[in-house]
Amino acid sequence: MHIKVFNSIGKNRDLNQKMLDFLDYMNGVINHAQGYIADLQKDIDHYVNSGKWVDDMDKLAYEMSHVAIKATKEAKKEDAIRTIQVFKQVNFSSEIVFEKILQIFGNDLSSDEIKKLVEENY
Image 1 (spheres, one colour):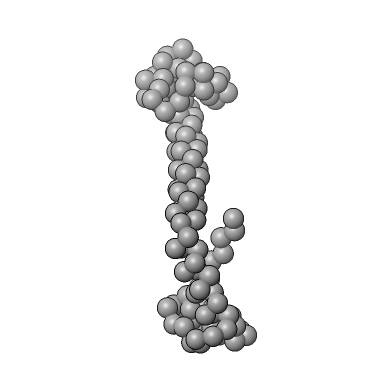
Image 2 (cartoon, rainbow, N blue to C red):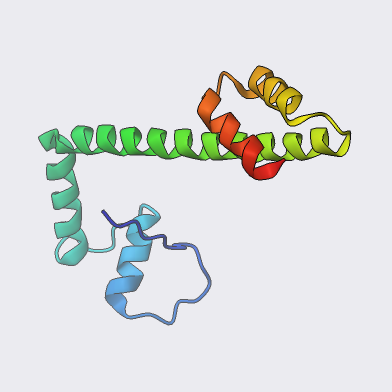
């Protein structure tokens, strides 16, 4: 899957007619009852009405949720590392740091992950 982003209301209109028609189409303006844009609209209507669109949106939602989960976990690890460094500066032992980090981040990170983070960052 590829995602392309177009600024359909941009001021640079130094484009060929097909691209201008496409950008107008993106703004809800269909200039021609025949040709590329009319064919594009027919293809989109067929795709949406076929049910494949629903399957594709379900797949996209699934993938996006996994990306979000991964990003959240990485953010939690970064937060844990910063917290470890703060505890280190106040001279907590590595054992106490492990216990504190486990209390704070134990719902988001496994005990083994926390142990590794403490070992690497204490």
